[in-house]
Image 1 (cartoon, rainbow, N blue to C red):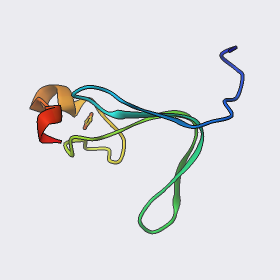
Image 2: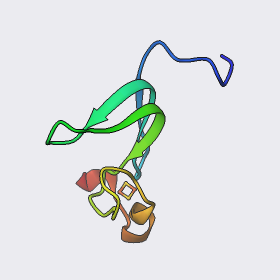
Image 3: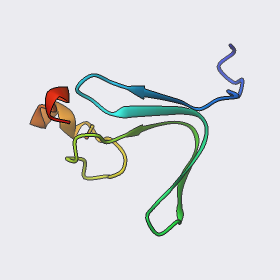
Image 4: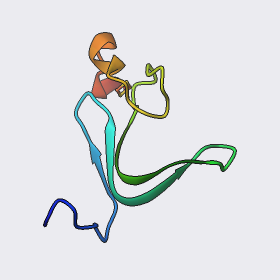
Length: 70
Ligand code: FES
């Protein structure tokens, strides 16, 4: 698939000891139902440590996220 080709499906990938990668055509809304993001690729925090939730900011590398505890 060409890099500029739009995906027909949304893929969610769990990174071991890291974030969730969401790619494809999606819309992310907050608890207030306001649109946060649309697009082709984002990384969502799974460790709870990000200062930029719901997005991953790399903090999981510092706090040592462990899939056994998530
Ligand atoms: S998973 Fe990366 S900051 Fe939480």
